[in-house]
Amino acid sequence: MHREELTRWVGDTDAFLDRCWRTTPAVFRPGPGGGPAAPLTLEEIDTAVAGGLLRVPHLEIARADDPVHSSRYTRSRTVAGVTTPGYADPDRVRELLAEGASLVLRNVEHWHPATRALTRALEGELGRRVEAFFFVTPPGAQGLELHRDDADVLLLQHTGSKHWTVRGGPGDADWKPGAVADGGPALLTDTLRPGEVLYIPRGFAHEAVGGEGLSSHLSLTIREVGTQQLFTSLQRLLLGSLPLPSRPPADDDLHAAAELLLDRFRARLPELTAAAVVEHARRAQLAEGAIPGLGSGPGIAALAAHLGTAHPADPAPAEGNP
Figure: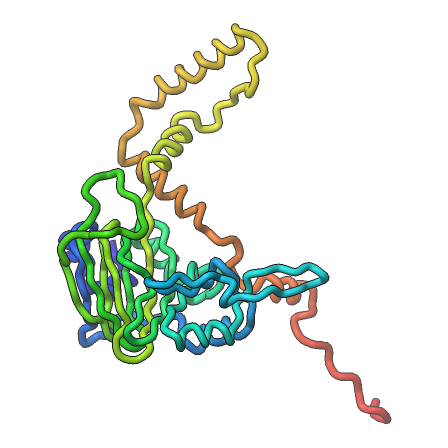
């Protein structure tokens, strides 16, 4: 399978999937052909924050040693008489960054079309849902403490530099994402500079500190399904659109519904494979993460063209002219 976008990030994709995927953190530095480029710029972030329409939880200010409550960097806005809290306050965001806090933009693909195009491309190549986060960290600052993510992560350094430490993965299948007190010995320590990529396998503990200049990086999280999604997919594959009464009124009706279920299970179960269940669960996860309308074209402009109002009306002739 040709993986054009993933190639930009890791080079030889076959080697990456064989040697690193889910097992080994690694740094990828661009060769002569160049590496990936962040679709989102700091100037676009300035515009988005200054516009005031970014809200919590799409925007967060983080500091590992001193959590920052959202009330310190957001304000309410009143529209049509309805007051809604949680909108970004550009001045407070700038002040907190100057004081050493980090800016975290969550699910950038929700509102930035170029980033959404990137995540969609990787979803098509990897068959898994991809989400985009953007971090801005001052020199010497640490936004998040040592933690585990419930996703494989590809990081692209955009500006400045950042020093990363990646430790081991979880010891069993019952681990949880979030902060950890001890992630074991360091497996990788390295400083990323613009254009360089870091891969962190799912569940591997990691932390980072801002280096020279204002550090910014794009983080792509590659989500995998869990056992609950597998169970849901198994139900859907076995039952399909089987019509069942929701409240059988009598014992005979209840037993008939149970027999119908068993008949369907007996007929379909021998045909199912583990691979089919996993594939169904991954497709369902991709469908759940889809954002209707985003990137599908200028719907309103297309409607205007269809109605013959794609262009402003011709100016009225000047007085005295025909």
